[in-house]
Length: 388
Image (cartoon, rainbow, N blue to C red; front, top):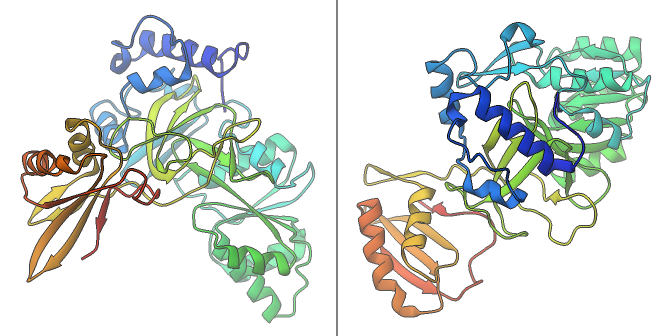
């Protein structure tokens, strides 16, 4: 998942090497501090890069917004994802970092892999193709759908490994069983891109397929994956922060927030990239840092009386009133009118009045405020709860 960055000194040394290179080659980062960061925690001083920023940057400076470390001619593949967002693939071995996820799931050299992710314009299939190549595994480039053709390939090539979304694995098994086909070759599933309920995992396991999840995006590759320990272990080459949604402010380990990822890569470095997904760092985990896995989306913007209310506005309210902990804005509807009710963790009940003033000032909408005891709001990362 890295290229041309020093391995010695660990993630901090590699990060500082990347920042120096970004300052020298990318106009967007010319104002980064000249001094090296003293710790990974210092990342919080740097700006967040959101998908909306990426879309605007790429439109203004095609094709990649000036973020690539070299010329397009030096890249392996060029993708078009919804947005549109334009993603490159570099030429380095296992550039997307999927080999570790495949290996942790039990994939070994020589295993035949049925890759059911799309090979059309988007990176997903190639993310796993690169890892398979690094491990020495032949791949059936099946793509999604066409179940009858999938069964023909399974019958002929006897793949041991399925790669794709979990629901499609169940469809393949169902169709094979309906036709009385021997599909016992399929023993390992590596899934991502959709939720994996424990009930589905248990069903697939009972049918002979041990399933492991990983988490990644088209921009970053594989960020974390299951390895038999709690949650998911963070991949090498990805520095992960969990922040309060709509901000760049880190939350304590164990608290749910938005995933930011700094990608340590010379071809396409991304600094504090906001994924829009929610998770939490597992506190006290031994060895490598771990996250709880995918826990929903961070985009909680809601329209109230014709105006958008966003998580970053709620965060600004909390910063404006000292002593605030978690805040949650509940939006309901009564008497054919939208209503806002702000729940605020604060040790002083008298904080309700200044909070109400800031709510009106920042959102330009009036709402009620209720002060609750610190620690009483759910640890689920929700800043805006639309209950209409």
